[in-house]
Every structure is written in structure tokens, then in C-alpha cells.
Length: 544
Image (tube, rainbow, N blue to C red; front, side, top):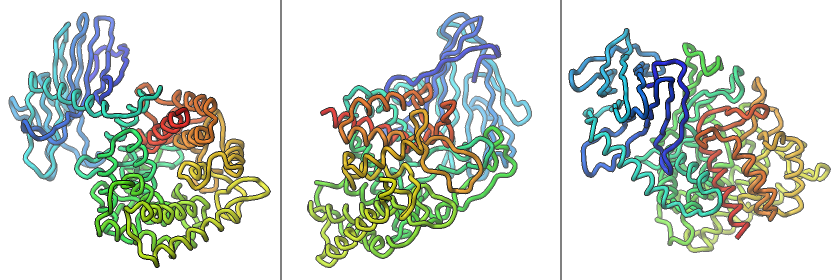
């Protein structure tokens, strides 16, 4: 939906404190405003489609001819569909047990497999277009006009009520609220699962094959995500995420899988879609993610960290959840000596990554502290074994994970390279950010991985073609370190610099092109927005 005049200009923004997008179009003859939203349905007052994209466009000044084009390509463009006319009910596309209903007060006609139409809008003229999707259920065709206006108003009110519950009141409230809204948009409402991104195969390096499917739930994000939700006052979302994790991981318990889909399914086989050219010619386009088969030992610490943050001070765990968390500690005790693929899912030989050992330490430390505060009841034998292995882990990390010659923790045990995940040692409480070893590690990471105020995630060793961009969340981890050690001026300067890399809507991709500042990788990326929230909160806590 756009002006028919090809020489239009546009400007967009979110309606304040909502996920409703507002775009202004301007042509030589006039201007119009377009609203885009996915209506929120509480299910109580009326029958509405579960999944709808609703668009409303209104003439603002002069006259504007609007062109509409509906081009539906389901199943990754592997199906060819023709629209079916439904009289006053609009049009439908049908495949399998799926229905997409197109309902609009703009006259549409078929042009091959697409639907096209135009409308001339003067000041105050308003038109609507609804795309309602259904799978395996009766399709609901939502009315337009006053009913559409009610859906718009209800959705705006819902978002403003939700964002009004954010308890952060520092100077970066607008940016933090936008990140919180983005996390909410990435949450599957029926389970509380949070996907890493809603996209697949947006490249980390243009044209080089660094293209992955991120439409899954990564356990490595769990601890930091839960802390971000709790810090901003969204306890219900944090608990829903934790409940989903404890439920989904039962299929593989006591061992954890790197990622699951939103339903908790574990088979995420990776395939290439050879018929698609990819973004900017970046092949292959992938669906599924083979990293689900990897061993990543850091995820045990992430899940326990999430549980500790969400449950601390809220009474004793139920027996089943306690059994599951205790089982994770047993796995850590057995496996922490093993090599793995690291938090970065390196597709190559397994190594002994220092950060993986740190997160194994965090898993055992978190379980023991859950016991200490009465949330989790551990047997004396578990307390002894968890404490013994925690001490052994710390000894290995400090002796073999720290290179005395470099004065820095290193990416792998007995290594000489660094990676930015080491900054998290201060974020999770393994080391104080002001500790001399953390300060010198911070300095070396910035010398080796820093450029233009941004950070790469590691020194290259993954063997994949192309140079990826700076990793967005790593820049926020650096800010967290500065805030926690009391360097507030430096933390705020870096935070302002990181804010400059958001797009016009305040959204971040996974990575940032160091030279141009352009977004790289899947978008928007939950992990980056989690980093922004936690860094802003760390600054505010340090200031207080």
C-alpha cells in the first residue's frame, strides 16, 4: 500500500508507547497517513481472528492516489496460488488447512496471481485492508469501518497499558520501552517462548553465506532476557518464559538442547531453499538450524540464572521443577570437563571455551544460592558435589582461562585469543567488574576486537567466508562493565554511541557494519535489545 506517484516521500514512527506503526506519505498533490498493526485480541468481547494484519490509510491534505498490491507466496514461494473471490466478504487464498482472508473497502481485481487496486483519498477519507490468517480452525472475517477503528483503539490502549507498567524511570526510558515492546513482539503469546528474531537468512556478511534461521528460542539468551524483563517490571513475561523453558526442556532432560521451536519441538533440521536468491544475493537461504545438534555447556548456567532471577524470594519450587533444576546440576558435574561449541555456536572442532566453563560455574553457584534462600531444597550429597565441582571450575578458569602474559582471560583454556563473551563474567557476577583481571581483560578485548566504538564477538577462527559485522549486544556488555565498576561518564558516552546505530524506529539487528553503521544479520534481534535494557538498568543502578 503506497502512493501511485513513484516520487513520493515517506516518514515513519511508532505511535507513542505502542507497536502500532505510523507512516506519512507525501506527494506533489497531497499527503496520507498509514497505520499498520496486529490487533490484540483478549478473546472476551468479540470473535476476532487470532492473527490479523490491519492497515488503515487516511488522506491528510490535497488528494493522493493509493495503489494496493497483494502478492501472496506461501511455503517460501514454493506454492502458486490464485485468489478466490468471495463477493462482499473479499478474497481468500487457500492451501492445505490454511486460509488467508483479504478484506478491504478498496476495490481489488486479479492480475495474474496478485490482487491490485487503487483509491483516491482526500482529507479525512479513510480506507482499510485486513489480512487475517487461520490454520486448522474456522476462519473469522473481521468487519471494517467502525469495527476496525475499535480494533485499532483497543490495540493502542492495550500497548499503552502494557508499556505504562515499565518501572524504569531513568533518562533512557523511551529507548528501553521500545526494546521491551520488541521483546514482547518476539514472544509467542500461547506459551511465553521468546524467539531470537522473526527472520531467517538475513546475512551477517553480504553475499558470503553467513545466513542462519533465527526463528527459534535459544537457551543461551535465557538468563539475560529474564533479568531484563524483571528489571523493567515485566515479571509475568519472565515467569512465562521460565515456565516455557522448564516445560520444553523435559523432552531432552536432564540434558539441554541449544534451541527449541516455540512449541518446544527439538527436531530443527536445516535445509537450503535453492530457488530463493537471498537478501542482496546472499545465498543460501536456510530454514531450520543445524546448531540445535551442538553441545553448548553455557546454556545450563543460563537456565539456572533465569530460574534464580525469577524465583528468588518467592517460596519453594514445586517438586517437579526442583527435580529438573537439580538434574541440570548433575549434568554440569558430569560434563563440564568436556569441550563444546561455545555460546557463539562455532561450526568446527569442539574446544574448551573459557566462557562455557564460567557458565557451568554459574549453574552450580545458582543452584547452591537457590538452596541457601530456601527456594530449592538440595540434599547434603548434592550440596557437597555441587560445591566441590564449583570450586574445581573456578580453579580451572583462573589457572588455565587467564593468560598471565596477556593479562587477560582468553577465549579457550590455555589460549591466546579473546572473545567478547568474557565481558559477561562481570555481568553475571563471577568477577567484580573492577577486579584487576576483569579490567585488563576489558582493555585487551577493546584493543583486539574494538573499532568505531563497537565490538566484534571474537577473533576470527570459524572458517566461514566473509567478515561479519560488530556484534550488537557485545557493545552493551562493555557498557554494563563500565557501569558496574563505577565509570559512569564512560558508560553513558558509549551508551549514547550505541543508540546512534538503531534504525529510524529504534530497532537493532544482530550485528552492525563497522564501516557504514548498517544493520547486518537477522532483524530485529532480541539479544541486542536485551543488552540495551540491561546496560541502561546498570547505568541507573550505578548512578543510584
